[in-house]
Length: 226
Image (cartoon, rainbow, N blue to C red):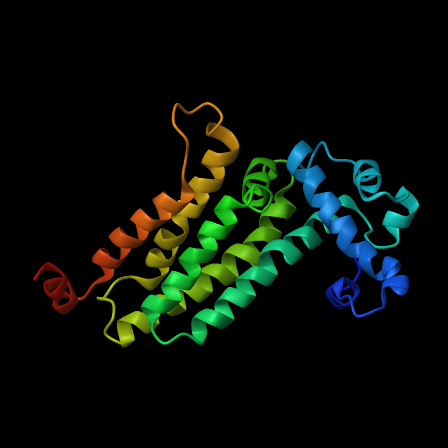
């Protein structure tokens, strides 16, 4: 049975003085090392011995924190993406308008796409899901589901507030995140072979412009064109 999220979250906090911090820092160091190894080797090829070596600890000590590789990978996802989604959702809900909330989400998409390690996680899940379906189920429940729920609510907020025209909120939410999926797949699969560099920032800026034009109400569209 995996350690509880509360234990992991508590261990990731760092309130102790420097001379007492080594044990408290260890879970964070393990997760950081695990992310590096998973990105380099993939989920299937990664061994817990590899993670222990990268973290500078014994395999036995690693088992004190995580029962198996799958639970370790899930905790990496929780700490690198799930917490981000929650934070972005909180900031988006507190924003002044749906358009501002949308920009908060799009800015975070750029941040993830530009991060070589965080952006590798969705690609890893996609590539490993055939042999390890539990990872896909977990990622859908913990990352994709909450993100789409927040974006669907954002679109409904824009419609209800007169900022966006009537559209299908669920389908629109999926359209919003589509460039992020393209970005991570392109970065970690095709970029090294492509003739020109790939710029996630430019892609998502272009996506924002097209998206806002497509979501604009007739009145807003008329004001933009006048």
